[in-house]
Image (cartoon, rainbow, N blue to C red; front, side):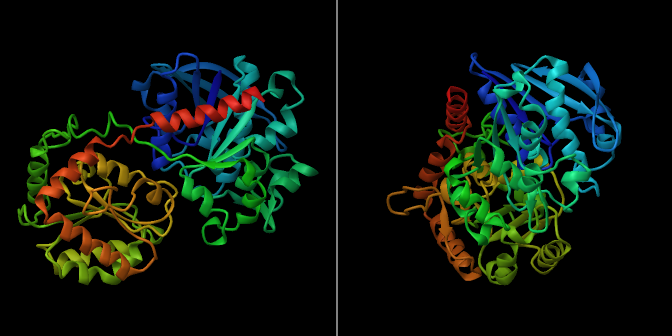
Length: 477
């Protein structure tokens, strides 16, 4: 079976968030099955093209018809172990500095990318059985497939799976976009029409053979207006093909036993290194070195839907307790200033690291006692899984993937994973923090639970098997 993943980013080539992690780990896990031929297709961004150490090889080129003019498409290739990576080259759309998103013509860029993927099959003599699409940037593949390619015999058996990683970003374009930029008309135009404009994600939900999200609870939540950002009606209409599969993490990369960023390594059988990691982290952050104080961490984008307004509401209450708090991330100026000011007022309790630093993130995961994720919505979340991998107890709101991956901890039996609260309320969150801090002070139970967290299997193996079952069901139908 041939499976092609289409996405706007994938580590190690391009990563701006969790999508990049997923598109590295899931194909790699599936490729362990020798009966599968796994490939990934990405835009050839300038950052990738200029990295000569990657050793990309030119494969082919062709002209892609569009409503306005023909455009050059180059295809480059690289193989890593058993995964083949294809890169779609076009200097006008992808030869730009900076982030992969946030350009004024993103709609045109990724519509071009989606059509170029399909057109490339004829020039590569490569036809996948399943194309696994990811988020709005590749959401127009099903509409292009049905509008322009489905009558070609080699394309007629291709099936599509569309995964919603974050429904907040849908690819909303002006009403004329489908006709003028994509060359669509009639029923195709209707499929893309939504709220007086064009919606990439809506078209994929309607036309893809299966739709998935990145946790079971999120698949349920997005059928309701509070979470759906306007697509709840469409999702309820097509819920027969909607399912949720929770993400895993790369347990080889995130491994406290081998992580080179840590001052000391540790495992479920020997946790002594975690105490060293905490002491060294406190030194690095300029906090008092105290083993007896709970060190609470947040590694997050500093934006509202991550629950930062809850933290803002009770930050002084948190810091009035005998705790230490470290925040790593960047985002809205409002929250960056909030944490900088808190550090100024409480230098012995608060460390605001307003930056992106992967090595520091590893040291924070390993050196912290508690990990706070009070998200308003969270499709899956990876940080809570990484924290548990490093023996750090999560404090989360019961939403999306946080609910699926962090069952509430029973402090008597030690069943469960972390401390949870349900209502999006600052004082409910504060109560969960207080319960977690009280548990921290029970040394014997804390050590037993940390060992259980480090042993917890959060790999991609089970999730990959669920995706494979979907692929097989489509190919057998």
